[in-house]
Image 1: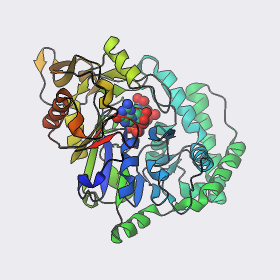
Image 2: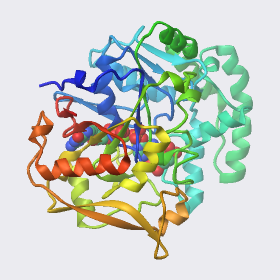
Image 3: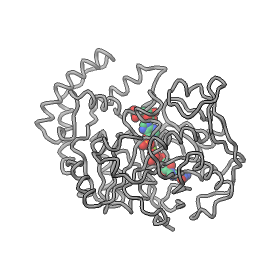
Image 4: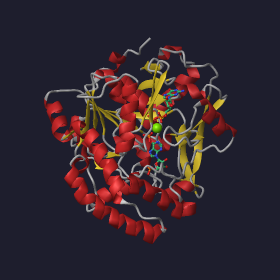
Length: 434
Ligand code: GDP
Ligand code: IMO
Ligand code: MG
């Protein structure tokens, strides 16, 4: 049975944001909600994201395409805040089209979105190698170097440049000459030849050209026509460049930043749905106070298939950290919570929730994302009774065991945001509407 989304009431324009370290199940939630919206808009990050959507027996993994593409009546947009790897995007578009879905008028790319080029990926890998013991553990998708060039301006290439041969020809040789000085000087890496790169990216530009537009204008027109907009956050608040556990973060604003990333004012967004895993996971380096590097973490990883959608890396797993989630919910302005992967916890006699930290024996007030402080934080846990009944067949909250209900209620109570959806499996049908 499909979940009855009318029970959510009128959401208005809605933003879906991850409230942990990513992989909360944003893709599933966006796909589910899409039928109530006219537009689905990605506004931050790039192909570092991996959003899985399961429909029946088919599983899709989107890195750049918005998770709304499975509903052709919905317009999907890559807005100006996204950094686009054209090769990855074309690959995803091909995969989608070969599975029988159309991309035409229903897909738009901002002319102001920045382009990830091969030297960005190279810089990402080489810089990680040099960090040695201080690696960030990036996805090696060139995200940081591309956003750095955006902020630096002089060496940036946007979609508007990629699709005009003369603009690309004018910029690329000079930029690559400068990158070569950097690659050889800093990393002793061999130089890049600009011509084959130009040829390959010129061709990508021509293939993507039909989709490129002024997305700000388009979204303003959509707002004026009272179309319903759904914003798909990538990465997550604790990976936010300004508000996450810096430097173990990504290079875009993932919690705040929707307005800058789309040109749509914050006042146009009525609901913010914060997606929260029923436990915690993190890929890459950085502090993770509730991490369980033991049989508990391993059990969660196996039951939750916690291996990265983008890199295949095993995800680090641990108990839910309500201190961090409450901070993230406040930053994102969450108006409702979607708790996902609750079914994974159907195996423990007792569950733990982190409700405070001690640093140097002293209780901390609230969450400070400072990475060095957090690395020394000792979690203060609350224990709740677990349950063993499987949940993946449920279609109604009433079917939840009392301890699972108590667990959910405690999350909403601590975070101070009402519960809206509970997910008990990857499929659209495995969703309970509150
Ligand atoms: P995203 O990056 O936030 O979109 O999340 P990912 O797609 O990277 O990771 C979430 C994983 O959990 C995916 O493999 C989903 O198919 C799966 N998933 C989503 N919701 C549920 C759920 O409620 N239960 C289970 N068991 N799996 C889920
Ligand atoms: P979704 O949208 C999980 C993490 C990386 C690394 C850090 C920096 O699927 O939730 P980057 O390549 O962005 O420079 O890497 O951020 N990271 C994610 N972790 N899910 C994501 O996206 C992530 N996007 C970036 O693992 O620790
Ligand atoms: Mg993911």
